[in-house]
Amino acid sequence: KNQVEQSPQSLIILEGKNCTLQCNYTVSPFSNLRWYKQDTGRGPVSLTIMTFSENTKSNGRYTATLDADTKQSSLHITASQLSDSASYICVVAVDAGGTSYGKLTFGQGTILTVHP
Amino acid sequence: NAGVTQTPKFQVLKTGQSMTLQCAQDMNHNSMYWYRQDPGMGLRLIYYSASEGTTDKGEVPNGYNVSRLNKREFSLRLESAAPSQTSVYFCASREGFSGAPLHFGNGTRLTVT
Image (cartoon, rainbow over all chains, first blue to last red; front, top):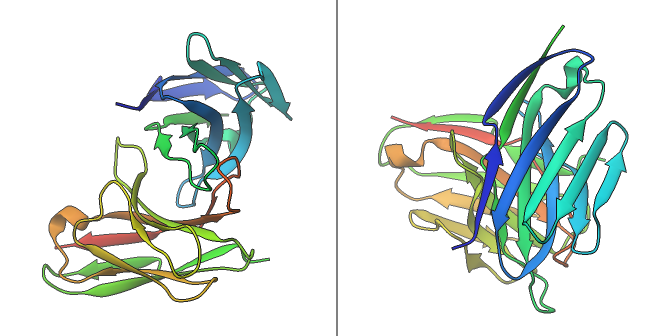
């Protein structure tokens, strides 16, 4: 069964500190892994996508890593800001074999709270 | 650029009542999706439409119906609401390939009493 597990469930940090969120998956065949940010009361917004050949990708203060061998990804946030308070969701796509729809498996999310 | 627009934002229903959640996107995307989000669980796919004129069941379709009215609009109908359908519902759209990101609306918070 395809599964995506995220840890921790929730995290509280002080503004300016760094943090790392984890995502472990058992999805096969793997196509890609995407991180989304979901602000309270809003829909998720894509932060970055990782494909099989990519190990690290940065988007501003967000850096995602992927280890396809151990089926783990992490999202590192540098110099956190109050606006980083949100839920971060890991989503893994199954290889669709050339069709347009690849099944997506969602993690339950990590709730990050940044305090001043 | 509005993106994905959902209406209504909030709704309270009594058990057995019916309602339709509306969704429209202005990005000319082929694929559209309906998800529900419950506390402590990942988003779960209810129905999707890979292109205009087609719809398919997702993981949790029971109790729901959908209509892909045209390329822009994809509606979700609850014929006889149940308390188990209390949830936040998200509509999303994306380009017609699996590597594309989903673009979500801001959700409809539905309570069934």
